[in-house]
Length: 299
Image (cartoon, rainbow, N blue to C red; front, side, top):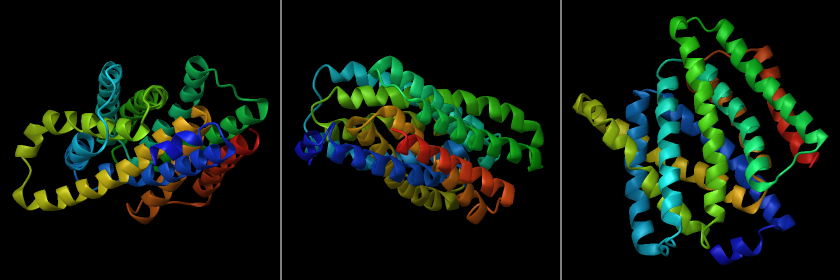
């Protein structure tokens, strides 16, 4: 599998697969965010997800894939630090603001900064048509967030701090997207990186939230761990998909396409979380999808 994946890097086949993986990551990431924001405390939900993620990744990393090359360990250390920052600020934002307000701001801040980071780190450039697509996509994302901010009446006093935390989280999204792309390109076997990435990434939150775990009612433990298992499987598909996409194709394009997750997140907020959706929000979601399509077709 690794040999085939490496063989199509830089080819039209590889680019098509990269874009398909990025779109899959968008759908799965919206589901992932809803799971973390859903019934339980976002800190506990993320800890449960990471616990299950570590239990799944450990045997694969230790027994199945080759061990990472020596030069990868400092890279993994930086990956760990960046993802800790992302998780902490994401949980802080989710615990203060409505999902359909916070999530678009997080995902809207990410692609613009990622495109800039991909230009600095990888020399990727966008043409005028692609920048126009980004402008359309961002207008839809931030328009959706502003519309939600105006019309949501629950926990209004905490929404503004939540938006500030969402912007910081979005900056971490851009940072981890760009750096993770560099990291997965630095190893010979991308699946070795993925296995060790998930194992290393799973360590922090269960330890950091231990005191919250001790206050959890016993009856809540089984539903929480089931949510964690589902979230772990989704996380492997979402983060694994976007990481492979950034190895196979341009980082900026993959990042922009992934941010159509905001559309799926709004639909999840409407269908599952029972958050209201009207014609204006549907129009804004259409802008997001249109912007992503412009970026792809203008390439």
